[in-house]
Amino acid sequence: MDESDFHLVQPPFAQLDEALWWIEFRHMDGSKSDGWSSTLESADRLEAALLDGTLQGYGSLDAEPVQLIERWTWTEFEFLPADSEGRRIEKKVDYIPQFIVCSLKAYRAETLKNLSQRARLVAGMKENELGFHRVVDQIVFLESDVRRAFPTGAVQAKASPPLDKKYPKFLKEIEGGKYLHSPEPLGFDQVFGLLIDYLKRTRQLNSADSSIRKGLQRHYKEFSRHGQ
Image 1: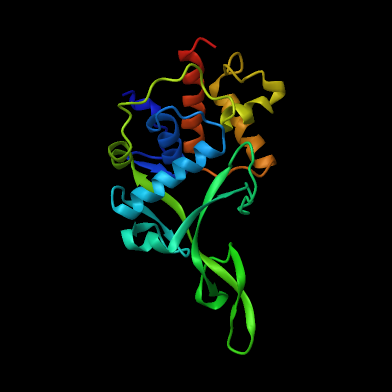
Image 2 (image 1 turned 120 degrees about the vertical axis):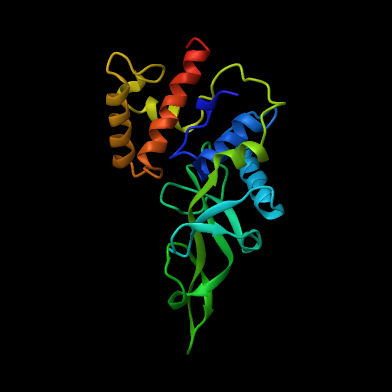
């Protein structure tokens, strides 16, 4: 197993989007990587591992500091596909920008610190009021735990890197896609800067810079392996 396949935020932890990428492209045998069903499947497998105790997760629950999330706590939450603004995606799309993790139950606003996910009306002191879901964000896992829970032994190498995933999509929008296959002649750091600027401009900057840097490195490595 190539250690550089896992693009980390900061060792030994991996973010939620990195863990989902690992499951979809390194664990799931025969994944077609269609940007929708295969990505949803990776989230389902991750959620199942958290519920059965195969994988331990850490995160910020209701804007609290990042901490261990107990196995039974995950029973109250669900993983939902969302757009770059954090709005739930209800219909099939070509690409899922992120997942939000929200409680099934709705709560009164005054009982929560994180009010990013609106819910239905709930009973208030005098009348019904807008409710909100509890949210788990800043989710991370130990890299070693993800590798153990989702091994790569049976997975066959794909013929080519997936062009429908996020880094190729982003790069195709930068200067006509001239840096899709290689950062040359500009250089990696300069292309990375262009990518960050693009993500900020389009309001799609949802991961740490270090995570994006590692992801971009992995993207170019994939193309290099296949002689693109």
